[in-house]
Image (cartoon, rainbow, N blue to C red; front, side, top):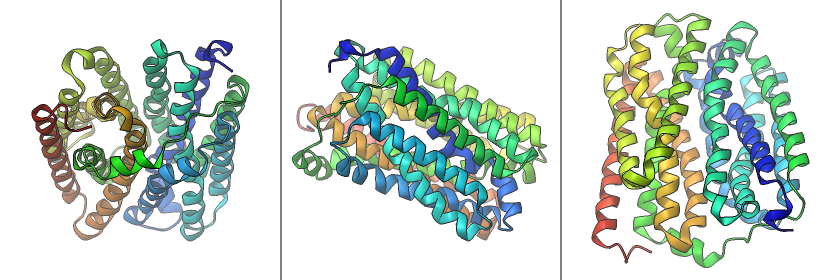
Length: 392
C-alpha cells in the first residue's frame, strides 16, 4: 500500500470528521454543566471534576496506549476508538447519578486518547511528503469546528432538552464518524513505532520538557476558567440558554479565525514568536475578565482569548515538530498528554477555588498559570537562540 493508492483527500475528510466527534465529546461536559449539575444534584465545582477525571485519563492514556497499540492497523484502531466513544456516551446518557457517571466518563475518554494522535500518525503515512503538513493541519480543524459548532449546539441542547440528549448527540456523531473512517481509510496503515531511545532522550532533555510544559501550563490557565463558563454565564451574567449558547458560538468562531490567521503568518513570524503572541492574547482576556459585567462586554473580553486558544496549540505543534528533529514524534505524543493534563489541573484547581472563594478567584488563578506559561516559553526561546545546535 502506497500513498498514491488511496484518496488522501477522502481520508483527510474522514479523519477531520472523527476529530470533530472527539472534540464534541471532550467539550460536551463544559457545555452541559448547568443542567448536568442540577439534574444530578451536585455543585458546578463537583460536576467540573468530570472534566478533570477525563483529562487525566486522556493525558495518561495517550502515550501508554500509543505504545501498546503501535502495531495495530490504523483503520481498525481508529474505527474501534470512535465506536467505543459512541457506546460510552450512550451509556453516560443513561447513568442515574454522578457516582455512576464518573467512571463511565473516564473509560469513555480513553478513546479520545487513542484517536487524535493516531489519526495524525495515520495521515502522515497516507499523505505524500509535499502534502503531509497541510494534511495534518487539516484534520486538526475538526477540533476547531467542534468548538464553533459542537459547543454551542451541546450547550443549547442541554439547556433546553437536558444534558442526556447532549451526550446522546455525541454518540450519534461518533457512529457516523466511525462509518466514514472505515469507508475512507485503507487497511494496512501501520506507522513505525517510536523507539525507547527516542522516548528516553526526550524525557531527559530539560529544554524539550520545558517546551512541553508550556502546553500544560497554558492548558491549566485556560481550563481553570473555561471549565466553568456555562455556570458563570448563567449565574454571574444572567445569560439565558440562548445567551450561553451564543457565547460558546462566539468563542468558537474567533478560535477558528485565529487558527486560520496563524496558518497564514506562522512561516513569516516563526513558531516560537507565534506561541508567545497567542499566549499573551489569552492573558489579556484573563486580565480583563473582572470587567465583563454583562453578556455584551463579555463578547469583547472573549475575543483575544479565542483568537489565541486553538492557534496557540497549533503553534506549539509547529514549534515542537520544527525544532526537535528526530525527537519530534515522541515530543508530539507528550504534548498531547500535556494538553489533557493541563486541562485536568485547571479544572481541578478551578473547582477547589470555586468552592472556597467563588467565581472571582478563577480569573486571577488562570492569569497566574498563563503568566508562568509565557515566562517558560520566553526562556525556551532564549535558550534555543543561544544554542541552536545544542538542543537536539
